[in-house]
Length: 428
Image 1 (cartoon, rainbow, N blue to C red):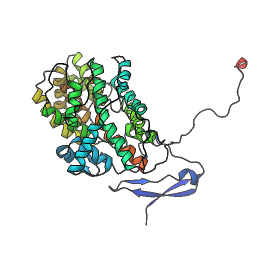
Image 2 (cartoon, rainbow, N blue to C red):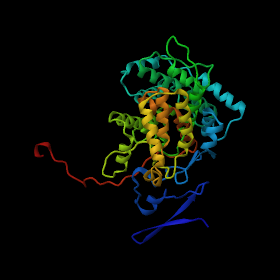
Image 3 (tube, rainbow, N blue to C red):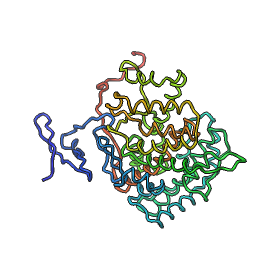
Image 4 (cartoon, rainbow, N blue to C red):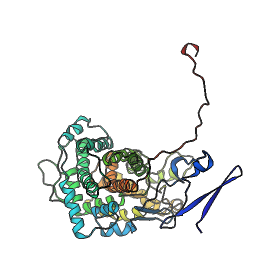
């Protein structure tokens, strides 16, 4: 017999089925609550106890520190797969064989050409414009250059739209950074792999030969994999709810970029570097700021430690810490900001206050360190997050459309004025 939940409202009892996911997660299905009760709804600000959908893409267990894409552990994927392999897995549900993966990569390369008129849009932005605003605008503008909507019932049309955005997005990222830096725009190099191409488009200087650093390539590849999806977070939920109105793929992705821009979401790694800059300006005393972080009466908060979802440890942080150590060791960067970061990390890992509360450095802490060491400007950090999250957003949009989910339309509890009569202006 299936499990049920009972809700007693003023003596009237209503029964609702309890559904169970493949990882034994349970949820009360209240989809018929309003109809059965004559208008009663639930209220859950921030949707912290509300499942908006059923999804087969990502499993996350914050208590146990588990993250899996389509059943594969994030540890194994980061160790054995490359970013496009993981992207294919997220979007289409299974790991590709060698032939399928090679076709996927070649098709992405073929669609890496961006219309010249998009340059005019980039040029119209002031150099001081935040890169996330530029990227969101460019992604939305792609709709104008690709006006036909995606036929979600056609596998061919869906596939073409996916490889198109996967090919063009790195170019937009490169242009966004080069605009920020006042450098001439570069195009994709079809002779390079996906991640190598990203680095060249971002860092190649006029008149100089660009030499790939395999340690940086590997570190960026891992960062993109670790950020590729994270269940129903703010930006992913935004992509799904915008897409539920049958908005196109590019427009839905643009909405996700805007949501990611928020400092409480994708801006966390930028906030880490801004905190480190502030500590440096105040003399660089890490012990002083560790004490401030432990003082409940002090408004200072240590950014990049602990995680809203992971109550034990962030499994992504364990992976990327190794890459961070390799990058810093290889580049030999002398930077007081990075020295402060390493000091905070070492103190937090051995301080009883942080250890007992499981306030370990998270993925945002280490990703900020890596991006800083690579020479990526702080304001570009969230753009790099978006680059990694792209396949996850695509996968979530595709799943939502294929499942023919209804348009998102949350309810509310009205707390405003009751019915009032209009008063003419001369009597107010």
